[in-house]
Length: 382
Image (tube, rainbow, N blue to C red; front, side):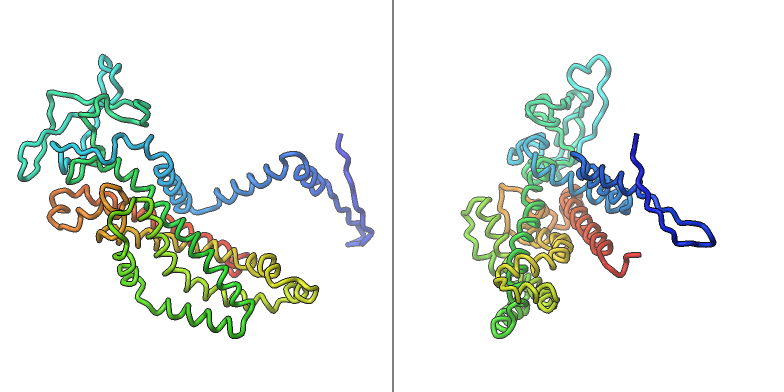
């Protein structure tokens, strides 16, 4: 039996008393204060936000989650070792998939006919109908693979050295999907710290920092990136090369963001609550941590989602030109190196599949960033 609280006002409207009920307000407060109530409220808000978002944003989010799952679980998802070479099947086209007959279901539900090279010079393949390679799910610690690793099923075909293109795309997601996030975390942390400090302090220090930012912004970024990447020694491991490329891109990309943050921090410096904290003896570091930096975090989050594609494209361009991740390691950029020859695109069009993954990733981040920017824009609030 619930208790109902009423607040009755004797304000008269047309001779009738106005009675205001606080039942719904009380119930919402009780549900929020109960154990797990705040969690349920937050989940409900997220579910409503997800349902209200455009379909393109939902699809983009699912695509990014799938690609990051590729990066996190590469050994499980990839059916084969990404560096294993099937020398008899270079530039093999994607193989078809067939449903197994009921009498052969013990081997697997699906099978493919192995490809046999009939013209080594032109690299022409035909199906070998005399044999079958069965696809097994959750077999040998893989999501799917073939019964015999010597008879592969090339879902996306193979590249010039006979390596499975799908397995290399899955392993390449480790570099291409993570380099944008890591690069943005570094450059934006540096940009927020330097920009907020410069805008809050002002004076000669502000002028000095901003002039340095303008010098960096005046450099042609891509050519400067090429020059720095060319200095990286070729004998380094993939991990070291990855972090050096991230450091180079973060060094180039922080200056423009710091200038924007500096302007926002300079405007926050004069608001009453910041001046009150300063008058009460708050230190400069405390003012930056408690007031200035939190006031620019919303803009930083939106700008970060829009900047990640730039890092992905920069890494892809470096790897494509041979200055990024080196063979035999895989990234989506160096997987496109075979597509630099127009003849390869004409005869082996599946070498462009890594570019499709890059395009989907870049568009997904742009769609999500545009949606966040429009949602948080005060002019769009009704």
